[in-house]
Length: 317
Image: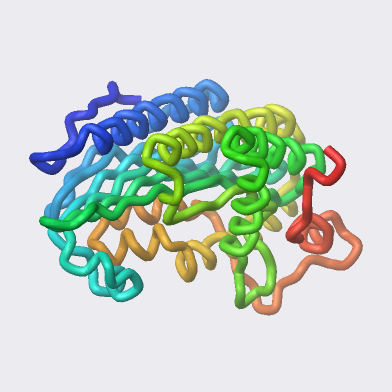
């Protein structure tokens, strides 16, 4: 991995609060990459620093063909401009005529072994300013898990870490953002969840800035605590070519969600973001088949019959 650099293009005047968020996100990217490289043990992240002609830039880090990770990306971006694309301001009229900044870390990890789940995490900050008016800002993010051969212990652990990260901010926070995740990562045209969920939140500004930022940090820091134990438990499990084929079909569902529903993907493409960085979330090998479905009574069928349900994984825990 290349030496980190925070010397990315940015606005001339940036508030101290925005600088603090940016510093945290850059450090989070470094820490997650280091942890994943150590776990993989066979490959390192390649860094591609880039600039956005309309304003901003980022650090895209990608790993391919590792001992564990078939393809993974951990991206930082910080983009800004004088106005939002019409598609964004149409949904948020209060943003019309405002300059904006959007920054975040977004990652997707696709392991080769189908017994190790795909994971996704994202933490982000958005602000929009206009002379003479109060700034508009919010935080968003979360993390979610997409298993292929799921294990109940893994699902419980994933959600336990999520609940523990939310606990200092109120008992109602985990159930609220867990339910939001279940709703968001749902393929409406398939009538099924993308995975076993986790946390999702957006437009978070009902707390003061410091509390909201503290929550963002709690969620960002919790991702590795949630994911690495599952990787360690499952990465040595033997797998067959038939199981890899099932993984490829299920990855097709992942692609469908990202290209049709994902807000980050759509905002990135509509705002002139860097296409290669935005689409790094897509897996390297994927399949579709006409009216494909696993045979009844198989472990493959159990994925959708039991695990891909909007259930309370922590009932009684």
